Length: 465
Ligand SMILES: Nc1ncnc2c1ncn2[C@@H]1O[C@H](COP(=O)(O)OP(=O)(O)OP(=O)(O)O)[C@@H](O)[C@H]1O
Image (cartoon, rainbow, N blue to C red; front, side, top):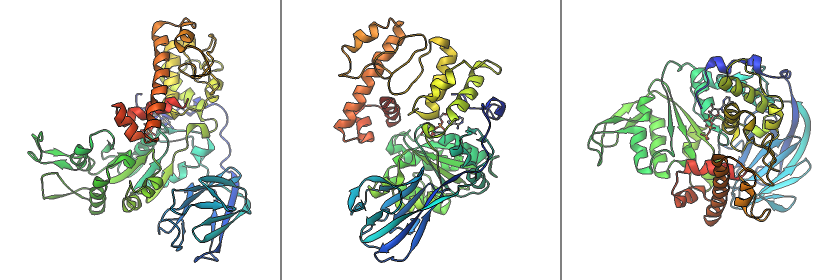
């Protein structure tokens, strides 16, 4: 999509409904160590950031433990409505709730959680004042009037003013890049360059030279000296997108470059000084990547001085309508009447592809008018004015229908639309199968499919709709 202009993003008059007052309350919990080497210590999980509180033996954990049977990053605790969610982070010795080993579990208070020899008693503390809630409905070009987003804005403002590295986490299409750009533009480096490097976009063998540059003749094909993205971002901000996909061997070099604020071009022994702010974005859970040995924890500490987790669109109450209005005005022209009932239909969908998918849905509506299909709940695909087929987007699931081709033919769609549905259906089946064959490993599945991981992820996101 075209980038949003400040002018567009600032169109708050388009936002339907009043903005709620800047206060909110939420449940908080205490975790008291009842047994183990840290007995007697007590920690609180209260509303606010970070959204996840980690327990483990790494000094970087919010609940640092000295129990040798506890993994470096053992378990995460996060507030989930009125409950506390505990998630095992792939620990060696497991996480137990009331004696039962769990992958993740929702707690209400009064439970005992055991990790290693450490026993934590969970206690609900009742409602407390939640994190500061901004009255703003956007941060730079990042739009959102939901409580979930407005809770982030004060932190974003503080981080924009500083130069600390930030890790931005969130599902695909949640706006990680938009946020990174906003942090740059609202900060003291705004006059400098904003450079985005996507760690999945170049073959692993070329990543080092893309990051740090190379000298002429450094390798076959290096016909001229080139600067890397570190040098290009000098005086500004470098966003390392999909950092979780960076090869382990390069992570050490990246860490060194960030620590020293110097880079060495491939084929050169000279160090070049760079003055950059580093931001990193990831769709992956870096804690799990560290636990699995795929991501260096020293690099993580260096990058995650601050962390912002962008919530998925399905958790941002009211934002679908807000964003849909914004995109509609942007695409159809200011003053174009927003179609009746369109917002409600859009709200009734999970948006696995998040804001990017919503934008596409609005763009289809603007281009095709009433004839545009829109996403609905998982129960089925509704096309305004047309009967819905018996299954999800792209056609029926195997086993729930007869011949998919016959079913789509029966809809009497124009050829391009019918073809699109068949292809959608096929791609979903294909992705399911290849993922299963590779034990859910997306990188391997993408490689086996002969397509870029990024594209595979897009197909995968569609698969779950
Ligand atoms: N809050 C938002 N306000 C306005 N536009 C948004 C917002 N979030 C996302 N977008 C738009 O949605 C699209 C996807 O955003 P972006 O590329 O920042 O997502 P991402 O999280 O970095 O995705 P990926 O992980 O796939 O790279 C962009 O076109 C962006 O302009």
